Image 1 (cartoon, rainbow, N blue to C red):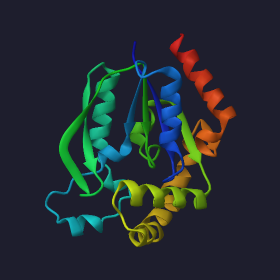
Image 2: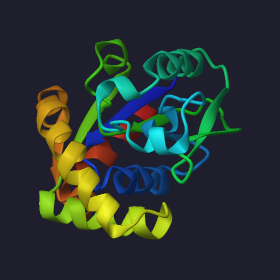
Image 3: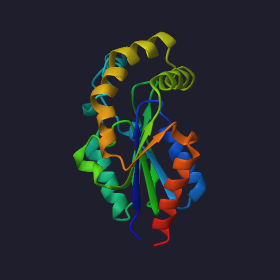
Length: 205
């Protein structure tokens, strides 16, 4: 059985990971695998950490889409993959990998997932998580300060300089490719029920 790919896009802090985990919890880890687009940030070993900090991590060119495409192709054909583990403290790949094995449902989540023509068609179900900007920035502050070792000032500066303008220019327009748009993320129980019913119907075919 070839896997069914589900794509989850949306702005930073919108609740993409929450939606992915709700799907996985409902279906079980034996039937699902989750891949984060954040794992596919390009590596820049030739740059110092201070130089890497200045890169625009919300622009489409920052992601290693060729590697992500190859990995999706491999999973499609039943081949396990090694997903790079990325360090947000060092702004670089760690050199370690997470083994992902083919499952009936492969969930991929990321801010710019629907931007790229070369991977968009992999997804049988495309979900855009639409959450108010004030909620998203609060979530990003909490995540980056508590989990990624960033200062409050650096998070706010990054949001104003790159995150917000890149969201308006590149992320928001990809709504047009979504099959379903979820307001309020995983807290929208009706939307989640509809999505889960559709996925279960695919599994039972």
